[in-house]
Length: 360
Ligand SMILES: *[C@@H]1O[C@H](CO)[C@@H](O)[C@H](O)[C@H]1NC(C)=O
Ligand SMILES: *[C@@H]1O[C@H](CO)[C@@H](O)[C@H](O)[C@H]1NC(C)=O
Ligand SMILES: *[C@@H]1O[C@H](CO)[C@@H](O)[C@H](O)[C@H]1NC(C)=O
Ligand SMILES: *[C@@H]1O[C@H](CO)[C@@H](O)[C@H](O)[C@H]1NC(C)=O
Image (cartoon, rainbow, N blue to C red; front, side, top):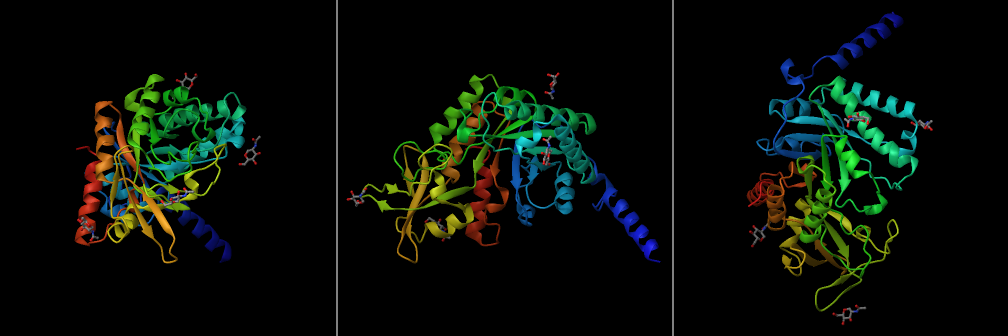
């Protein structure tokens, strides 16, 4: 009896892992078509994906737990769902290890009816190191395997806002771009290495953000391979001192060789920010140099904070330049962090954030 049950349960597990969890079996079929414009969404879990603007979404990178319902729904809207790929690079120097990792991901993608993988390696790498070559090989071999085993699948790779060794990520950006379908450019956390005054600044100042795309394009990377990644979050900095001019000095928290960093602040969702801004000390302010909104508030302990973020006004010129530079699309970190409640003000703000992706 015992062995019978063991056998039965393993048979059930086996059949479950291979059978389509969707209402209609055709929803498990991979999405193969190429899109002329990507709207690439990171999903970190929960169920707020139900409120995404699905007329726009083309790819969902699932960084939360596997959610079969999300996969079925995305497929019903013609959108891809891709795995997260993250692994210590020191383990990937070895060819057999790399092959084993890639084989495992392809198998996982097939068993979960996914449409590709987003490789998110944000590790420091020195030019010319064994990891430098291993990273390029990893991307090349992952793309080869996915395209071979799952025709039409998509392999993307996340890069920093600039190709200039940001956070000591000195990667072979040109070879990596050639070796995959898309680079998701994380145009945020741009204050991770502050070398000037230790003060609160915008998460993604406009001209710095756009100049870095020119740096990528000057490397002769195909613009269609670049997806602009926007932050749907901001930074909340406790101010050591708020000057008369409104400059907020921040604690010195070093990061990868720089004396201070946005790590002195806390990341806050657009939802939280919208709930704070009206009751803040300053209300919404606009920095014309960085082209970004910010505000000051006092917490319950009397500590002054400065919050920097992005909203439709700061996103609009970025989204416009996606069009003018002929980039492959736009996306955000992350889709879940807007206010998806039924509150009329929230509904409108959330709709405006989605619409801002298409420019103004
Ligand atoms: C292979 O990866 C494992 C962890 O997944 C690691 O412990 C091991 O050192 C790696 N082997 C080689 C030869 O890199
Ligand atoms: C991977 O590298 C090989 C050898 O350089 C090359 O022929 C192939 O086109 C590359 N594959 C991809 C997907 O870039
Ligand atoms: C702190 O802010 C005050 C008020 O604006 C200013 O007078 C003072 O110079 C600032 N101190 C420092 C160390 O920046
Ligand atoms: C905050 O103020 C803005 C501008 O006055 C207004 O449109 C918005 O509805 C307010 N938000 C909330 C949550 O009351």
